[in-house]
Image (tube, rainbow, N blue to C red):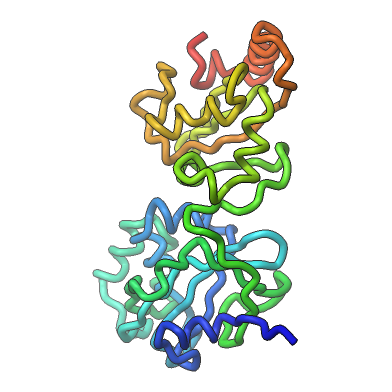
Length: 282
């Protein structure tokens, strides 16, 4: 009989007592949890710090997760709790922290603030460890053990599922190109097709339409973005590629001529208005 690995097993392996840990699963309603953790870790920590009185109990640590596929959750890290300030004792400096990060000032009126610091403990498992959290109706703060579903290889972005479900962050694109062995399903899929792709600049919503044809398929073209950010496109230069999100508008077989793929690219530029209102200059 095979014994399932649990999250508590991992905590003990790293010398952490499970009874001292609260499990926190952020949704993506107020912030994009994974993006905030990767791009604005200080803001993400501040976001996690504000909770109603007693929500974190007497825990010494928070194990923080974000949504993954279905009812699973992705581990982001372990934060230590160094005391907290009750709402009645909050000071203007605490309000200034909310204002600094653009977080709701109403929290200052009704929440306690916990002093959190991201620890190095278990950080090697960040964005790799997947647990079974349970249905969305389950409380987002728990002190309950969870089964481990998967520990992904280093730099893995998960298994490829379908072309129409791709929403790839720039960070994940870099991981994909850096470590093709850990992302073999993505490599096989994206290198086998040509097509028209979309880049959204999440900072302002502007769109860029591009196409891939010839050797290497879409993967070959996207590798240029992973390397230098803009892949030589004029209006993408000077923008922070970490705000880019990559998706595919349509795929085409590798046998389709370059002229036909470019014609489809131009059609999408017209449909989406990316020359007039977006990031295409031609």
